[in-house]
Length: 519
Ligand code: UDP
Image (cartoon, rainbow, N blue to C red; front, side):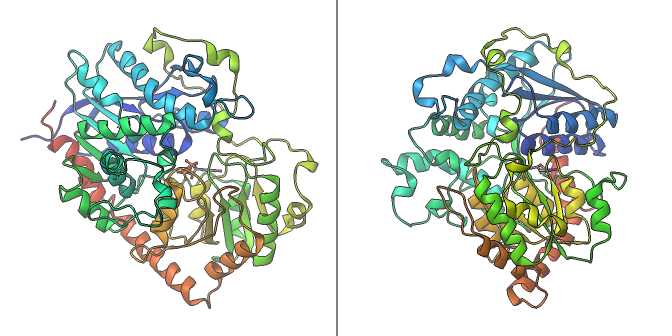
C-alpha cells in the first residue's frame, strides 16, 4: 500500500500575520514531507482591506522569491457596506475590527468556494484556517468536490477544545454574559477550567454578531476530517488527551507544532549585530504582536519599566496611532473606503496569482515626529534598540543574548519563544491571549509570569513591568530560575517534534495520507 499520492492542496488562511506566517510554514512542511507528494499548493487569503500591509507583502514576496512552489491568491475584497447597520460602527463611525472579523468569517468562505470552483486544476485536498471553518459546509454542498477537508488551528489545543464545547455551553448558560455568572471556572471535560474573565474574546458579548459567527464556526468544526493544531504533546498533554478521549469531539486532532519558520543566518540586521555584542541572556525582548499599537501613556510606562529593570532591551513597537492605542494597526493600514465599497462577484483566479518580483525585503523605517513619543522614551534609547517596523522576531528570540520576552501571548509568539527556550512575561491583550497567558503560568507548563493588565485600559504600570523583568532575568531569583529551566526543557522536546525519524509532529502530518486513501 503506497503512501505516495498526488495532491493539489488548497490552503485557506485567515487575514493577519498570525495566520499567514504559520500557514505558509505548514505549506513548506507539506512540500518537504517524504510521504506526501504534492503537485501544487495554492494559498488563498481574504482581503480585509483594499491593500495588504507591507509586512504581509514582504512575507509573501520572500516566499515567492525563495522559489517555493506555492501560488498565492488574494480573494477580492468583501463588500462590507452591505453588512453595515448603525450598531456596528464605533464612536468614530468606523466599522469595528470585531465586526470586520465577523463579516470575514461569514463572507470569505463564499469567495473561496467560488474561486476553487473556477479553477481548472481542482484541489484534491483542502486545509482551511480554523476560524474559517464555515468553508466546510459550503464545500460539502459543491458538486464534484468530494475532497478531504482539514482545518489548521494556529492556536492552542485548549482553544480548539473550547470551540467544540461552545455550542453546548451556549445552550447550558441560557442568559447573560459568561463573565457575569461569578468566578466559577468554565469546564470542558478533561481540560483545565477557564476563568470567566480569561475567556476567548469572541465569546465576550453574546449579543454581538461576532459571537453568532463564532457559534456557526464551532458547529462547522465537526465536518472536518481532522484538525492540525500548532502545538505539541508536552506543551498540552492534558488537553490533547481530553480531545482524543472522544468526550469532546470525534474529529481527529493532530498536534503538528511547532510550526515556525527557520531562522535565517544570512538575515543580518542591525538588531542582530547589536545583540552579537551583548552578554549572554542579558537582553529583554518586548513585542506586543503584529497588530497592537501602544498608547502614548503606555509607551511612557513601558519606558520607565525598562529603566527600572536596569536591563538592556530590544523593543518592537508599532507607532501610536491613537491616544488610546488599538489592536488593529496592520489590519487597518491602507484603509480605503472607496475600494471597500466595490464588490467583485466574478473572479478570474489565474489573474489573481501573485507574481514573483525582485523586491527588496528589508524593513523600511516609518518616519516619526519626535513629539510623538514621551520624554521617558528618549531617555532610555542608549540602553537598547527600538524597532519601529517589522522586527526579525525569530532571529531575535533565537539569539543567545536574549534572556526574556515581554509578550502579548499571541500563540505564534508563544510557540516561537518556547522553541527558542526564552521565558515569557505575559501581557495578554485581546483574542484568546488571556487563556494563553493563564496556561503558560500554570504548573503544567510553567514558563511565564503574568502581568496584571487592566481589562478596560490594557495598561500596565512601570513598577510592575520593571519587577517582572528583574524576576525573569535575575540569576538569583528562585521562581525565575525554575521558569528558565522549564522553558529550556520544553525547547529540547520541541526540537525533536519535526525530526524525520521519530518526530511526533512529522508523523502526525503524514496522517493526512494515511487516514484518507485519496489519490
Ligand atoms: N512578528 C515579527 N515581527 C514583529 C511582530 C511580529 O516577526 O515585529 C511575527 C511574530 O514572530 C509572529 C507573528 O508575527 O510570528 C505574530 O503572531 P502572534 O500570534 O504572536 O500575534 P498576533 O500578531 O497575531 O497578535
